[in-house]
Length: 470
Image 1 (spheres, rainbow, N blue to C red):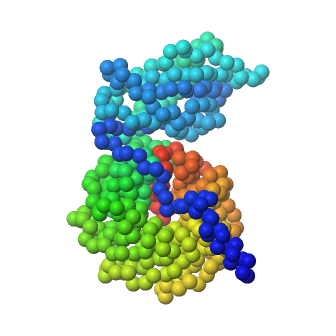
Image 2 (cartoon, rainbow, N blue to C red):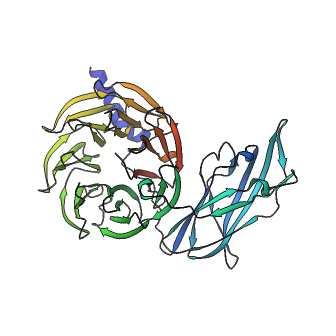
Image 3 (tube, rainbow, N blue to C red):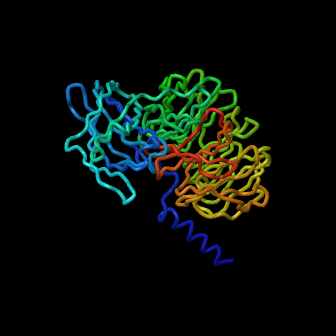
């Protein structure tokens, strides 16, 4: 027993050193002030291009006066097996100006035949693609490219890329989905049915947790790098207003009461929770909680909020109407977040620096279970239809599926990468999983437990939510 305790202490001590700390956000870059940004997405290749492969060396935006502004190429090699879905091709910050199109330099190309791949001649100079657009400050733009295969090949021996460029069509309100990108200071807006990105909303610095008010067609996003909360008009796809908090607050995640009147912000930097009146858009109160509050969750009754204090290893329980902390529950090291069971009679708590999942009875606020899993748990989702529990672990290539009664593993989803956050789309019975390492969101069927799609997004994706989320 003493040896097990010693081993556990060693794991807890060395884990932050070896694997980092979940409470740390990705490096936040400066916000856009005078510039805008553009995302180029290439659409799935046509079937006739399945034998084609080519490498893009550079892509630049060309202004009306002929100046070129290089973009960062995200997907240099394009071929049928890679471009079976919409893929992020390139991104860049551009000065506010008018543009005539893009300049694309191809490094090499080949066409696969029965005897293998045959090289194709490529232009010695960049190819110009005409597409007029204007960039305004603090705005983001999605531009899609469709490969014109027949026009790209010349006499079977040469390749000169021909693309059709267009602004994608906006998705209907009931199909909207959102991903916050902490590293690139924006939100990817996608169609949850087609799994294609069609818009990007530039925010303040360090967007992280979101709260969605579907009745008001409004969303709130915490800005860890601005000590603020941005208010998003989801119909217009734009920032409607900003709520200022205190310097050093570093708001991380948000929770909205069921009536939409009160927004709670877990402020990691100051160890506080802000109460924000959504009508006046002002902070009306704040209370002190534990150290490093990482996330916040409102219980099914709507009367209490639970704040997961990562650094002080506890959960602060808040009476929302009275705006006071009514209890503090000790946890193992590094509590990250929690989820309620379908009936609301159990609260599952994951802890990054402990191999255990805690199960609490939320009424008397007591621990009723402690199940050994593995250290490094950073994401959890309880399916409210089945009560099955999905867990994501740092530096793991699967998301585990657990039985809610015995808490034993009963399956897994092969993700190939770490899953930092999960959300369930009730309309399509799918699990959306945020994967920061691959800068994407994986989508799995809850029935087959297989990946059915993937969405390329921005830098440091943190949170995903959608209309119809359950």
